[in-house]
Image 1 (cartoon, rainbow, N blue to C red):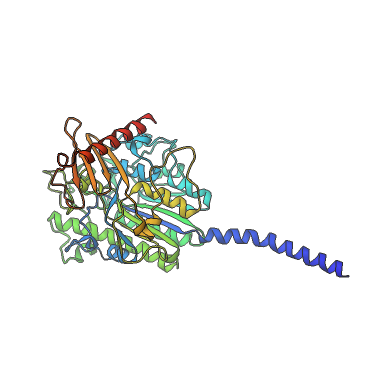
Image 2: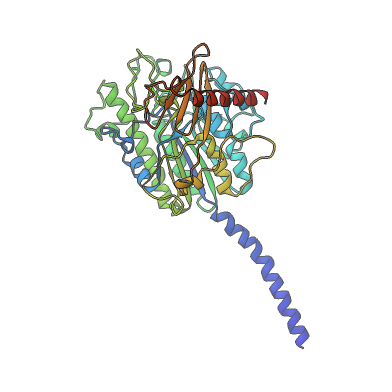
Length: 453
């Protein structure tokens, strides 16, 4: 009798273990954080209230900074849209992935980023994540290169570098897609992409999800995107103008630009509110940054953004082109209201997402970044980092507080101490020849390594 009872109890215990294991595994998957990765398009370092702008109304991003960490020394791996996005998605320098130029109108519908490269969603889906991209793609849209063919379960957005905010045209071609199908939908693009993100959050709140939300705002307007008779001006909904007391009919480009940024801020706020409404705030990692610095191209009448106090802007390797505003919120992990001056780069995002999702770094390719969570949680542990940049004729190295920069291969490298000279006004190459020589050697060695691959 005792033996029978013992056998019965043992059988029940084994059965309970077999049942509890998949339950525990499911609970572990549910504990993995949701990930919301948001990018702005050509937003300047000095364009937000939390970065010192006294006029711009960006209450939701300012609030996000109060709830997380505002990063002061965050870099994008490239000063132009296509390349910055390709490096974000792959976690690899542009020289490794073979894409270091802005795609033209025709190239946007070609291969673009080679299909052998592995993108963020392809690392996250094996960990049980539902994945979506809503917004600007800009890394190639040929067969096999489109988002839903590269790891995203859903895509709603456009293939090209920018579109008209209301008509959704680029270079005379309508450019709005859902999955693999062209769609014609009415609405302001910023609001449309936010709508999709809110819907996706609601529909997938019971499982881990990854949303890549690359807004096209506040990219500057372009004549070639406009309909006949349409003015080439910044576009925003009336409510964004009303936030400043401006008339929607104003022709002042500064006022119109502010409305575009405020409309973007409002849309981001709606997505964050949807996380709250679904009870997901505490288990969602939010990363927001601008893909590159605001453009400062001359004589177009559109240079109304601000990279202050940085020098120059997009498509250059001056700080205004590659140092960008960035905010990270992860409740319970990152101190709310913190300001983090640790050198970080967009290449760090993929390794961070691999780490928080429970994945492993690939053994078959080099990732150029590091998991940035340890430094975001404990800024005092930050160590000097070295970042390399090369775009068009520019070359640059950031190491510790020093920046080495060359604007043309025919010109000498300049050296700046960014701690003392953030606006890069005083060349120290002759005063600190040893540091300049070491950084030149580091750049040459890096260039040789990535070209060999």
